[in-house]
Length: 120
Figure: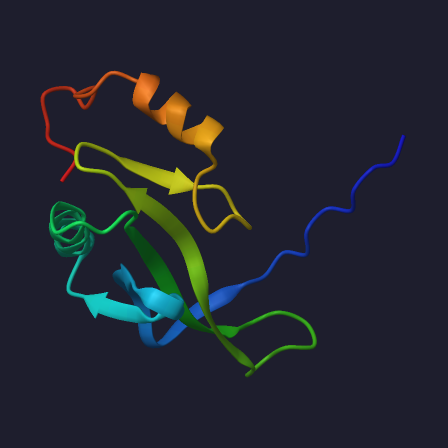
């Protein structure tokens, strides 16, 4: 039995633009939006216009504050979501989108489980 090594902990301190939300376009182009709700609205409009799939992401611009990396910076995607007309699903790390099996499970969940509040 092989035990995977624990991931290295990174201490990130926001810098530059900090946290950003946006729509992921063709070729991974990131179109920044003012907030998550705006990104969801834009992607749902794209779906209504005939796009097959729509994604949004949360990105971070930060400096490292841990051993051997003080002062070095990073800009990367923290989370990716696949947007549907009636729900939003967090895409697992290292996947560009949900598999067909994962999509089927997403659509098995009932809508409106947000205690009377709209998701966005």
